[in-house]
Length: 145
Ligand SMILES: [Zn+2]
Ligand SMILES: [Zn+2]
Image (tube, rainbow, N blue to C red; front, top):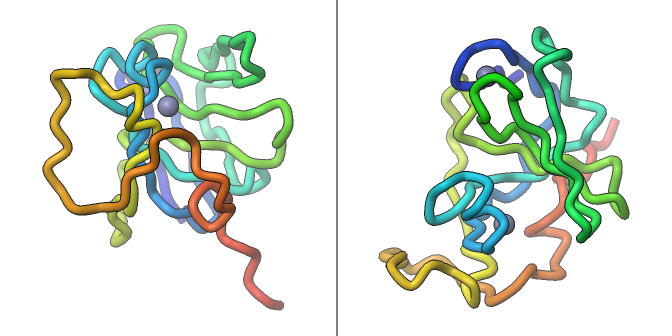
C-alpha cells in the first residue's frame, strides 16, 4: 500500500495497486502543468486509488486532447491524469508519494518536445512521443489469483 498527499495536505490518498513502469514525461503539457522540465508518472489501476481526504479539493482540467488532469485546488499540486479513452487507468504523479518505493524511472518520453534547456543525463531509453507499448504505459497486469 502506497500513501501520498499534495503540497498543502488537503488531499491525501492511498494506492492499493502496483505501480506501472515509471516514465519521465517531457511533453509541453506536463511542463506547463508542473512548471518544470518534466513530469514523473506511472500508470495504476484506477480502482486501486482511494482518496482518504480532500475530495472537495480535487479539481480537474479537461484538455481538448481528451486528457483530464486532476490537481489540488488549494496548492496546485498535480495528482493524476486520466485519458477519456482509458478511464480505468490513472497516471499518478509520483512526486506526491510519501511512501518510499524501490522502483526507479525506466524511460523518457515526449523527448521531441522537451525544453531546450533540459539536458537528459542518463542512459534510459528515450521515446520522441508517447510509446505505444502497454508494458511502458499501462498498469502491470493483475496478479494471478
Ligand atoms: Zn493541496
Ligand atoms: Zn506529459
